[in-house]
Image 1 (cartoon, one colour):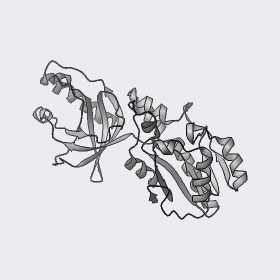
Image 2 (cartoon, rainbow, N blue to C red):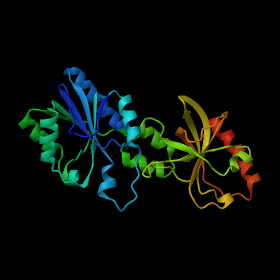
Image 3 (tube, rainbow, N blue to C red):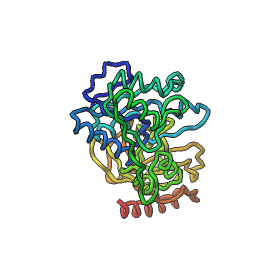
Length: 306
């Protein structure tokens, strides 16, 4: 997969089959679009092109709000590469770009820059300034400039229409199973291991304290989770706790993971942690002995799940 960080780069494509979108989560709905994109490209001897944006448009359009995303740019690139896209264009989303009309976007990018043969879009797709562009406009310009347009129907899981918004809602509610079903894979976070206060080590449950570097990355609610931890291309089982640690009168959110059967110095290194299931809420215990007893039960439950 060739990656371009702006549309001004030298982008050479053959019979480009293009899709445009934020693709936050690269969920099963997105995966259907990408699969169809690659299928058409193969049929016409062309190449698949995904146009996406950084940062997430809502971060720019709603600067005073706390906007949370499913994928960092690095995660999105990894997922799209997995689905074997030929070209990935990551356009900087700025206030100036947000003001570009759908007409100019079609003319300048889809037609003049990429010479697209076909455009594949998701259900109810809107684009351009104030999201004024829609399927009707694309069909109109397709006839005028000789490119085809295909709309992919909305995808459903158990009668739930798949969308990034619904996945964020499920994660915010702690409904990991629903989020993972809609994503088509287990939701994950990548974080740097930093020093903690050593309490976990003292009670027999050493933890890696995790520093999530992207402030917009969505974390599930406070609680304890069954997780899988990837480190140096090996998968370990574990349990993750995120919250303020009320048993020790904490006030700042801390996310830490106890990795089973693991004894390595990993400070300043990175872990990729995938959420499998939520065990329980965060609880304030009377003391560390009571906390240790609960963690022993948590580990048993995690092992059953994993």
